[in-house]
Length: 448
Picture 1 (tube, rainbow, N blue to C red):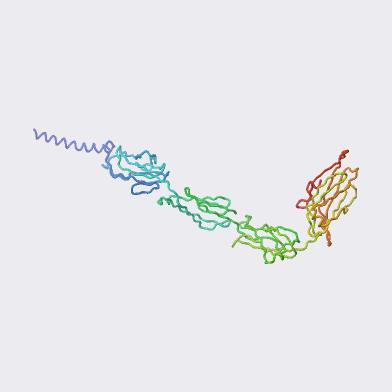
Picture 2 (spheres, helix red, strand yellow):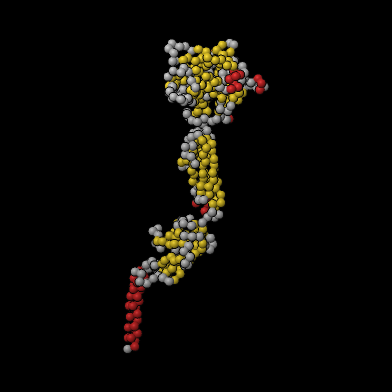
């Protein structure tokens, strides 16, 4: 009987073992029983980081992806266990978010600088942990190089830059961007800069909070200077030279034009004087060569002109800018005249025509010397008015004169006024007038 029982027991055991093995397989396979895990190792599989012996260093605000590594599960056929990443402190230095890159991975983003720890956990058990240091690297230096010369409109250059931060392993992760302070002078595209206009501009190279400035002064290429080869003026006359600067490309603002004497002379021998704007004044008879230049170095263009200065001839001149002021008082027309001094004149003759007399002609009213006019800077005329006159209407011009001849007449000024009768009161009118604008024409007030 005992022998039968032992045999029966062995048969039951042999029958149960396969059932247990099959049941265990399916329990592991469907995740009812969690497998053992070995070899969990926290790794960063995407993003920029530095791996030290005891920690990972990541940049503030730059996401990285954490992975538990290629861990081993036992048995191999078991369903992958549920593991998770957890932050082990409450410092709020980082945040963890689900990752779509691989199973069991998370995205870690630094929220503020400092230390924290993360762990891989299975249920409540810590399988592996790692220290994370979040840093905000400081750009210590920004080096910029320019391959090319930017001096003239049309020049181009290639920009390149490198960055050094206090965490050297991150150097290559910092890009350098470029921008121009004036896109009408320097234009930047794809790290290439082109001079497109005349003027000053600055290229700013930027990486994070580091900025380097490179300043440029772009000028036009000067092809040539166009101007007459000689000018004839008289003593005391001033002319302005207006050289035409031809640039390449055309119609750009040229560099500053400069003037200098071409020949070495004593000051008392000079026939002219000039200023930096090209205003030439004849001071004595003779000739003078003036060098006109534009640009610098290889971009410099030069022309030499001749200024011939002759003695002034009064007959070729004309009195300009006649001004007058008048009033009527006590049956008299009082006129104050002034004009520009005429070089070479010894005397001035004042001619008047009374337009109220039909068929009247100009008559010499008064002559004064150059010395008298320069001393007083004006001439006073007093013309009698008939007691029964209703109006005054005079035309006046002036000529300069010396022993050799007489100048051209000045522009005619007209004084025309209606006389109003106010019994027992003097009538008085006082007006200022100018006879000429710069082009020699009468202004509106002088024509009244």
